[in-house]
Length: 179
Image (tube, rainbow, N blue to C red; front, side, top):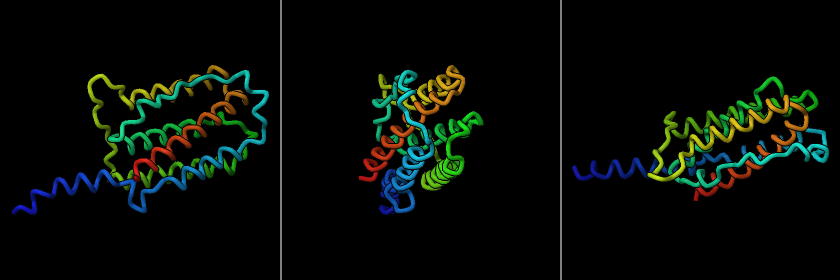
């Protein structure tokens, strides 16, 4: 009878370490995504610096460990949505773009399997920023930027650099969750 009292504790420990299991390590895939984003455009960013903007990445809201895996899932989903737009530059290497989208899709499926399809947010503590709303607002800002710049080549280059920063952040976050 006493062994059943430890079951909830064991389940919590099991769930909190989902990214630690071998099948849930996304770091390699995130680094591959980062590399694909770097390689897919043959253009220099130099002429596009005039179009850069601060998208105000909500880093503070993303440091809530209890939502770490859900944060990564939301980011991957939002990035997939952005790069699925039909307005991506034709000059980009389309094979690499398709590889990126395929990799994102696989990582989303992998993360959903690891979480047991239970991709739910913990409620933020009183007075803290809601990470889900912060992320949605951030990615909405990126989409509005692209639309405002009429999906120009330079706008996409600026977004591509921004998304690369996000992959670096996600890689760091997933490594921290695994420790």
